[in-house]
Length: 69
Image (tube, rainbow, N blue to C red):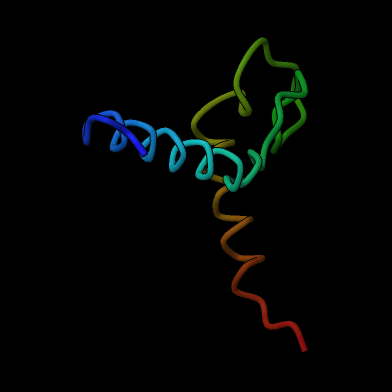
């Protein structure tokens, strides 16, 4: 039991943060040094330009819309 209600609230907040971090989903994309769409070499990020990012997002969306029987 805590002497101060604020100490207890701070401890519970910290517990909730730790639980949320433990249960978060891992990032779906990992930096590979290549554009995830056209595989061109890149220095940072996941795509070489906005067009590749847009095309990749459209491809992922289309794949999610396909029916799996």
